[in-house]
Length: 171
Image (cartoon, rainbow, N blue to C red):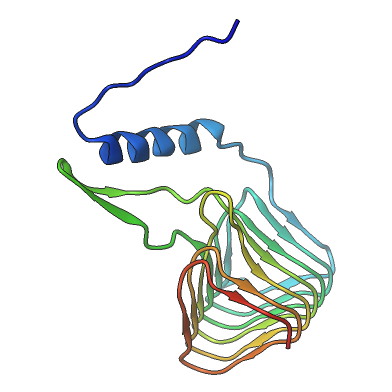
């Protein structure tokens, strides 16, 4: 027999996002970060101690920040000041105030990708990770919001802003 639960509330939007945040926190699991021995991570870069994977021959320059939930393929370059894997901007107005929604996705970066100076790449949200496919190059001062998919071989120029859940095809 299937047991059916009913939740009655005056503000279903508030309740939904509070429940979402609860389950995101409950499902969280910390696994030690894995950094290839051939990767070169500058001593002034920050890499979270859990839930990061960095492939072979990756270069991470000074003052880059790699938060939890980031997977970087092989032969990538992460330039100075880039911030990868921070929470995106997901706020919900409710009758009880604004609810900040937790991001539970990842940033998945393919092979041979270059992330420029002072970029911001937000982690995915719910069912849609942020993805940057093989051989893509992103210039300086670019913001990539949560859930964006950038195809293979793309060239993203300086100061671009790519809003949440946008898909960019190959080349």
